[in-house]
Length: 305
Image 1 (cartoon, rainbow, N blue to C red):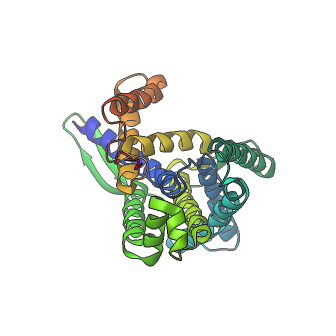
Image 2 (image 1 turned 180 degrees about the vertical axis):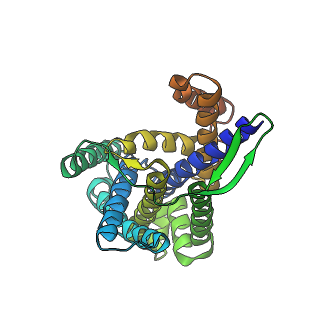
Image 3 (image 1 turned 90 degrees about the horizontal axis):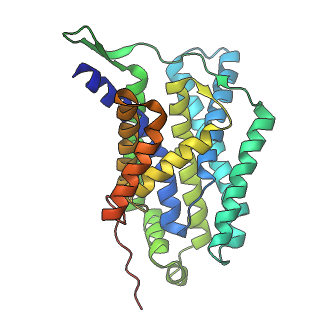
């Protein structure tokens, strides 16, 4: 039981990171109706920006970890949000009235560009981060001698995920900007006729998704201590799977899907062959979509004629 409890803790931590990335996918899909396949690489850019800012602060002598992490978080969110805005202006806005496949191809091209851009700018080698948050929040030794650990990093990741989820949910449900988002989701043409600035709403949605991806990038960096130019593809595919599993277009569904993907991967790796953990995650996705085509918390689309 102690071993199982440890894997649950690890799975929730990993799933929290996937959930943060998946929210960006589901927000953009809810407004534009398109999948932003460059979002995973925005997450990767956010991780690299967080690493660069932290190393710059360390070089300047900022040694107090909470202050350094707060500065890193704010700066990384701002800079990554700028990347998200740029992706929307270059890859989506010019093609918004085109056929549905064109923005998809453009987003894939932007993802490839970001991968190669970071590879050229930062090099192809893995970039390590020295341990920033050390120690354990809680430890317990079982009867068989196995020690269950909850590290301070895991607590920070889960709490940050909860706070971010609540903040974005409040923005979407309780603010005028959130009402504009929901109006554009239902009918962008009618929303424009009623005075909603559709272009601004879509751009800010991309900005919000990119800022949240940078939070996930920092959490990934703290948890694994490394970053490379390829992490965006792997994490992006997993987060997209999480968004579809939970119900694309649903914020709680994206977080639920992320937690499920993280738990499936971790538990499968712990009890079965680690080489097939991705097969297990995608198999669960297929099974769920067979019986629930809209995902776990998704709403079926009703097209009115």
